[in-house]
Length: 394
Image 1: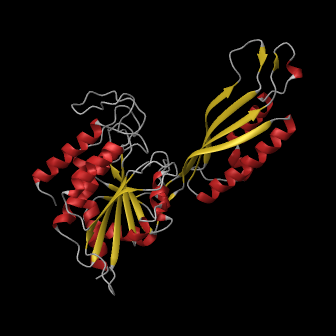
Image 2: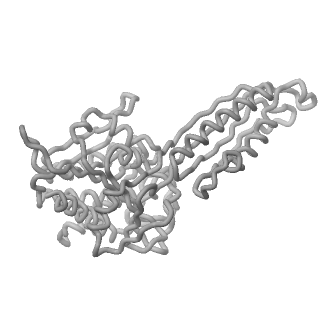
Image 3: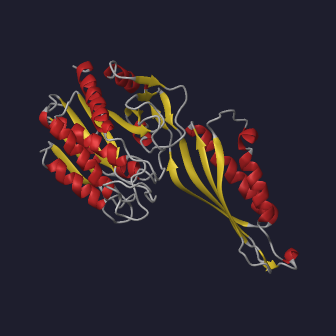
């Protein structure tokens, strides 16, 4: 749908962005580069610094609008939003590329560089073929990896001016057939959140541990509760579970019995309701254990992601649009999480996986690199989806 020259330019853009990755909420140079590219396309509306951070810092979100502007007594038949992510990961790149990351310990190991190139291709197309009676919005969203970005964008008062009718996104998925689209109605990506459980007691001499208040017994019991949480709550889902990812207990001080501990856990579920049950259960049990053993406790959550739940109407539109493309309907959701679920909770929408190749290293692997050929494929799919929405609403 784009010329050979345009596709080559988009590959170069992807590689330039890959070379200069930026972490969540700090995508300043990335956003500046994208804004420069978008300004050359003369969009009908352009929003930068989109998002409310709550820290006083400027956000890096961008929305470019293509299509007729609203006029008095006239509304669009449909406003269609496509979204990609801006941020990279705190992972050292271990492959030698001509465009290897120049920032030590930071790299695009989730393919967001490729997603940006895909959406820029969509913007390029609709800058040449302006929608009539419709509007297409290309949203470049910050801070997906931390789970903050989508909510920050939605909370920006200017986002209410965009007010999309339908929202769509994609994510490349290594290990699946290159270029195939993977979709399902309902949950596509699981809900997840990181949890830190802290216990505080009283230190003592290791020769007289009974004179202190140790968190060790509470930690033992908490681990047992987490490892058997589905049994306690009578939950049968194989996609709902708790993963203990780390424990910090005391110090390497052989003369001192510990007074503090931290337990790091990732909670995951294919249903937001189950996640709510997890949190309620853990809060209740940790409180009881702290009282039983005379400890103080604290629960802290981070990297909070709701489940990404696709709406039936949007999934039907994607299938119709990609009728001539390789589409696979998934039986079960992906285990990983995405903050696009905050959009589909508010708007009719769908996300789909885009196969990145059977032998491609996994997401977040230090050897991963986004396949350039997916830029044309992904943008073609988005354009077909937009045109399907337009044709079914005429």
